[in-house]
Length: 399
Image (cartoon, rainbow, N blue to C red; front, side, top):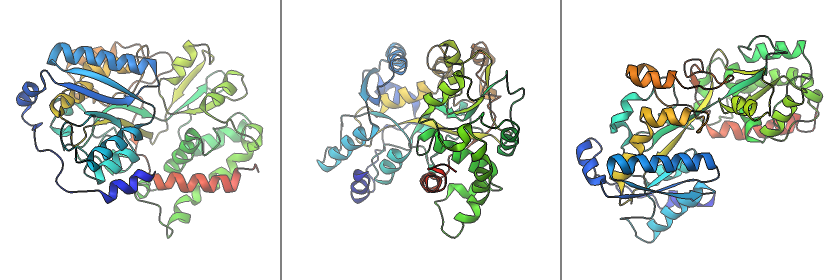
């Protein structure tokens, strides 16, 4: 993206505001009362928009904060707006107070000192966040360092039809063994589709003796050695795929349709609640369930960040803290609301709050937070780019 270079060129030290101090929560609450927070967030989902509206009702009721949802189609638009304000010298009371952000957009804003903070780890509800089992302190390998607060989790799961696959598979080698015994019954979306590229990343992580090497950018010196097990795995798997690997579904929904049509028995998803929702909508058979791999599966968090020039940083912190509350997290996890994964540590909750999560009907095919197990960190983005390009060269035109 062109604005990334502009952001780097305009990076100036010391623009992050020192006040309000998130460690003085009483002062934050006092300052937030009466503020209006403009939250720039993706607006392409009615259920998500409804959830944000509910958050607005709650923070208005309890804290006197007015929340305005500025609906985005592309988060980069918000980043560009903050950059434009920097260029114009508008370093106070900017148009954006909170952004739903992650990945390259966060990295660019952090590098260019366009973020307020650090603040997240001083918020009261941070004490409830699962910092060991969830990837909430890095954002696509970039250290968060308190400049954004997590509020939802996505994690790779595999959907399988129990009518044809009696037991969950525990690893990529186990998946290959199953494919040998059941040729043509598995596929994945064709890279560079995001979900297809995610399957490649998941295989790379699971087959690696030391996944930590994937947290660094791709190195020419080590690339062949690190990816060797992946290509060996795919060389064996590809002829065993649906249509012998000569064609692939174009997307996640197309992959689901193959399962609904009983052409495949196994599919990948980045949403633990997707199978349950698809069953409820009559898009998948009632016999479909989900599993994760023994070593864990890749996950990432959705975060909120505060621009450096927000005039309502106190109110924005109140919203960020509320998003991490057991009340908001349980509502977001309810499949009838959003079905998002929680960022919270169940063992850190009170018995009453834990009971709220336990009482949630996640649906027949949705794993509990405990059953989702360990979340594996996303590799550095350069790995996805490189292995996707190499996949296209190796397999893009069929075996």
